[in-house]
Length: 68
Image: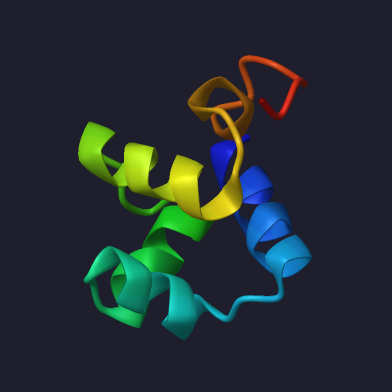
């Protein structure tokens, strides 16, 4: 699922939720809600996360097992 991949990618990069939230310009609680699936992620945020994590949107959404 999306949330599991987001958490995995964040941990692999060594980022905290606070750091990723700052990159995105959102509150840490907002980013946390993305990882837990409470809030959906808009397209613009997905693009930013794709750049931060160097992973394709398809990979982050679980549509592909290829990161790029």
